Structure formats: structure tokens, C-alpha cells
Image 1 (cartoon, rainbow, N blue to C red):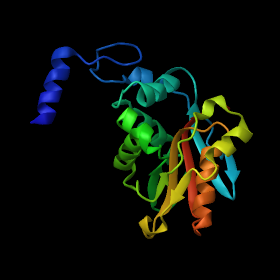
Image 2: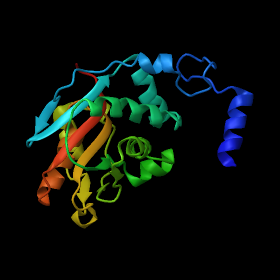
Image 3: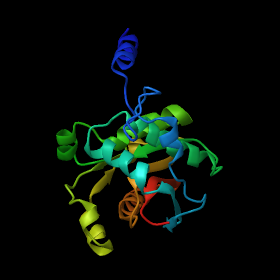
Length: 215
């Protein structure tokens, strides 16, 4: 009944594309705008402690607006399109095995202010597409870090030092780790999380970001 009512309201009020404002498809992101998203070449973006880090797309135009809309402007419906974009790239990697999806956590105070962690939403949608399980309990952010975009590489590492805590007992047995985030700039967040997992003897990890500012 709830889905029926939502669908009825969408039909009455003609949900518009967040990007081009078209109401022809009555969706948050129309197929034309989604198809304009630019993929990066299928290759490893960087490595840290033998962990491969991948980035799916170019941080510009619609992809940039998508990430900012979900992260800062309460556009939760965009999580599906972000996950869909990542899934299309992920399928091209031909990586084997079963994964547990671990979204990069945010500090509890910030989550309370935003009312959600945007990467939790993306992880849930990615799980529906991939069939993987989401694991939100194995790692948490225990330090209220400063926004990373204002900092250089050294400052980012200092800012994130000891920012995460891993509870190994909460790992899903038999599953590899897939850490996901929206933007990978210097890779500092991934690197700090990799360190924490390595510290408790966990090494079977892949990191995957929606985008990077660098081609």
C-alpha cells in the first residue's frame, strides 16, 4: 500500500529529474542524465599495503552533482543511482569471491546532524544489485575529524590517524572485505581503514570509490 501511494503521488506530482528537471520518466535521475556519467578506465587506481583501490568515474558534471546532492542536500533517492553506477563498473573488474560491503563510517555526531550516513544508503543499494551483504558493525569512526577537502596529504593522514576502530568479531565469516566510499582524493581514508584491518590480521580487502578528482 505504501509503495502504491508513493507511486500515485509521483504520478500526480510528476517527479522531476534532479539533473535536467525533465518529468518525462518521473524519476530522480532520467536515463539520459545517467548515461552521461563518465566511467574511468578499468584498472587499479592505486595500491596500499598490497590492497587494490578502484575508482569508477570522473568527478565532474552529473556525477559531482549526484554525490553532493546525496551527501549534503538530503537527496536520498540518488543513492540508488550512485550504487548502480558503481555496480556497472564493478562488473567489469571480474573480481572473484563473495564480499561483505563496508561503507566508510562517519562520526556519530555528524551522522546525527545529517540524519543518515550517505554511504550506508549506497551500500544498501549496492547490496541489492550485487547480492553481497552489508556490514555496518565491523568498523566505526571514533574520532571527529575535520573535513578532508581543506587539507593536504600529510594533514589528511594526521587528521585520520586513529580515527577508526575495528571489531574483528563482527566480521562475516568467509567473506572478503569491500570498503566503499564516494570520493578518493589522496586515498587517506582508505589507507587508514586498511591499516586498522591489518592491525587485527585482516588482509583480504578491496577498496572502491565512486569517483576521484584525478584521471
